[in-house]
Length: 114
Image (cartoon, rainbow, N blue to C red; front, top):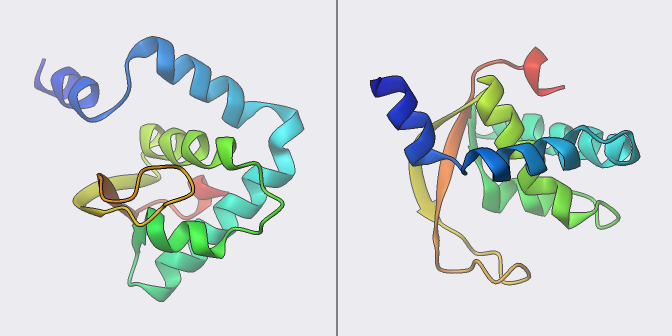
């Protein structure tokens, strides 16, 4: 019961998770997904395993569909490849999320993030 409460509290609702899975898993976004995963791994390598969305977004090529970024990160978190360890403040003005709290994760399954 505690595990279910944690998952529901920290993540999106079931319907939103299903939509994110469709976006992240679509073959049309395969190239985007590869670039996002490479940015996540590079960020983890540069920061002792820690992955901040602020730094990941700076490493993502401009041609990547920005709608896929959150879906991929959420999917990797649900898979257990990324684990939330703390929070920081978003500096992402483009999405309108600047100033909002966001999770900071640790990459714990490098192979699962590919």
